[in-house]
Amino acid sequence: MFFWAPLRQFRLTIKGCHELYEVFKPLTTVLITLIPTLYGWRAPKMYWSLTVAGLLLCLIGDIFLPDGENFVFGLASFLTAHILFTVSFVSVDKVKHYVKAAE
Image 1 (cartoon, one colour):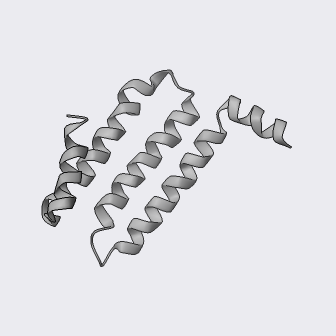
Image 2 (cartoon, one colour; image 1 turned 90 degrees about the horizontal axis):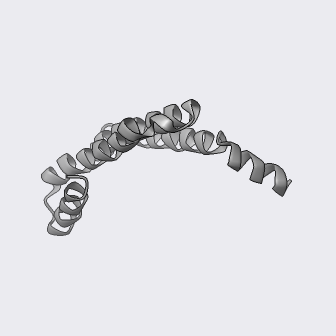
Image 3 (cartoon, one colour; image 1 turned 90 degrees about the vertical axis):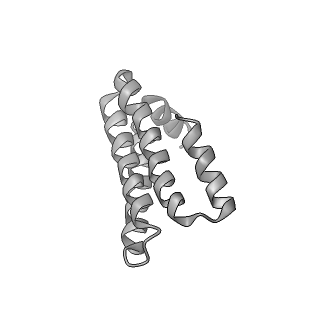
């Protein structure tokens, strides 16, 4: 299932089936969100929480982006998600070590 939805989404994009694309695009994001939700319990709490929150905001963006009326809300949710991803990656100790070494 994890591999079928993205492949189906790509094929629908090529064929031009916009209605089905709007179903499979969020489904792909839901499946991607399940990976850290189910298997990320060993990760540091802040990293895990921010990453899952970012993925959920990406899901909201995938739902709002195709809709012309809510396009700006989709962009805002993607922007917020990427800010959360940046904060979560910087929260990992190894990244902090490399940032300090670069200064």
